[in-house]
Length: 212
Image (cartoon, rainbow, N blue to C red):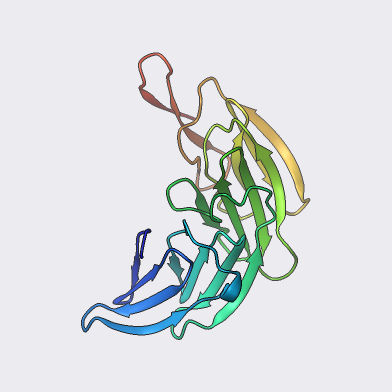
């Protein structure tokens, strides 16, 4: 059974079934172009994430705790990344509660995955090295990640009403920006990277305000 949304790219549809088997379908003739089960015998049921297709690559995670990158042309596995997490009751990057962000130069991949207990913010250097857990948060201000236009800083929510700025070159937290209201969505950097716009919601009247 298919329990997640499909992605459409270059006239083809990409989707996953409930055990993490990926399909590429030609909707014009209803033909399956390729079918791949990267987790093999380790595959688990229940939820999987919706696939994301970017520049000829198909990205998705599964309940096994792996994140797969496939070649969109033939379904061959380009790379499999391990998600370093404790909570495997939810799939890696479930589409309903998580976000995936590429750095502008395509080198880094940042993810935020919401489990039953906490949210984990993870960063991969796609050129080399394992994933790095940047933070685990039981009461985040949201579930998202955002890169500065120059690709040198990653922003993600901190506990309560705050945003963490992570310096990629230094590999450490650069600053924490305290907010007067809880953030309700991903931040946006200005073109020069100096301004940071944050959508926030007032707990009283529920109005959304953009904080700069």
